[in-house]
Image (cartoon, rainbow, N blue to C red):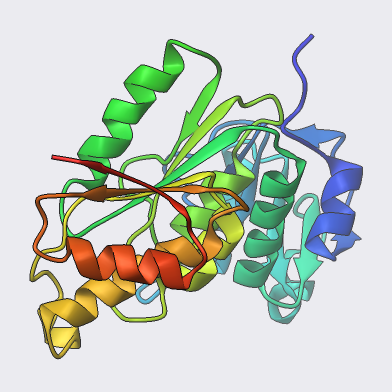
Length: 250
């Protein structure tokens, strides 16, 4: 008998939600996109730059969603349509669920960032780790403020290895993401002049990428590209975050 990803009762507490409609016994997955949502999954109505997930709640139920997470402003509009977890802010609720997914996990966690090569490195690590045990990784390039908590929320409790891609466009974006992931290993692939329009120099990009060290667990390992021109700067930033175990490649 398969273990559910999340039970309905656990979700009430983790999401800090009130329930409208029949509480589902469990959910089999977590989704923010009705186009890929599968039956018995939990749908989060996230408001994006171009679309508001609340406009697709009805479609989520039509596709067989076990429940939807909606905000208080839309709570009355969906009464009677199906099970809803009503919260103050849906993105904040997704972040809470992501943190809970990480808190319950005993997996060995790797976080990967860099200007180039993040997704390729993540997929290479998936291949290697999968030979050793149950492995959970980011889908596609889900590496931003909603992709990271979504990947954590989807992580089964029995995962043995987790590989998370973490991206950024601006300084300060990686810190809260890696704070959720809390990796045992943090890797920076390479520093390049990507998103330089948001930084005064490539050194600024290196410092922003080095935020990944802030979330390392105690005795965590940093892995750096020895051939990168920013290697010494990155190593210094790792030391500033009290990282003592630093490995290099190249």
